[in-house]
Image (spheres, one colour):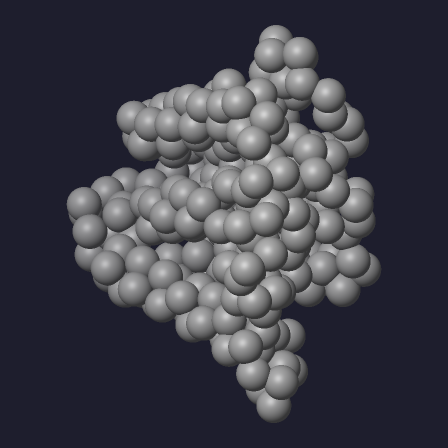
Amino acid sequence: MVTIFWRTLWDKKYTLLAYWGGEFIMVWMYTALFPTIDKISSSYNQILETFPHSLLEAFGFEGSFTGFASYLAAEHYGIIWPIVLIPFLASLAGAAITKEIEDGTIELVLALPVARWKIFFAKYVAGIVALLLFLLFSILSTIPMAYLYHIDFAAESFYYMALLGGLFGWAVYSFGMLLTVLFSERGKVYMILGGTLVVMYFLKIVAVLSENLVNLKYLSFFYYFNAGDALIQHIINAETYWVFIGISIVCTISATIWFTKRDVAV
């Protein structure tokens, strides 16, 4: 089981390093730019006031620049961060089972003297560890960077953001792992996972822009993923916990049962 865990991470080493390193560099860039941005924040806020509030909210920005946390919420964590995270998790989920089937190695894995549910969880936990390290490099690394550039900030903001990002990532990854045991082609996993999340994002935008369709927001992961609340107000709504944890548990249990009983054909 431990061997499967390490092999899963090793097989994706270049992808992991690229995403971890890319996010670390991106956060470093935003942090280094903040002292300059902060000097012109009043002019920037005046420009933002000319835009309709609903339009800004639709794209994940609900206020003005009032500090480091609000700056990162608007520039990175509200939109760009989940856009980077989703393909990262999709690649991990797609490689877990469907890649083994496509490469013809699944029979070798299943021939090991290890129960199927242990094989699944070894691969599942490897993805969770990769996600935790993604949170470290993309969110928690901001804390020492802010000290480095003498930026006034609250470390608590990034603890809340890491928790919110972890819940969001766990739900997306668990859904992806369910798909990877249901299908034998990575293309289908990527298409369904990506398509579902694109539809969810569209539902969030429609709900913000149309009062008649406001209830559609509850069908979107992105409604519960509110980076502004986490970073600025240090708040994660109770419904966010219920939705993300509930979906993660249901998808994980369903995937485990299906993989245990599935007749895998190469």
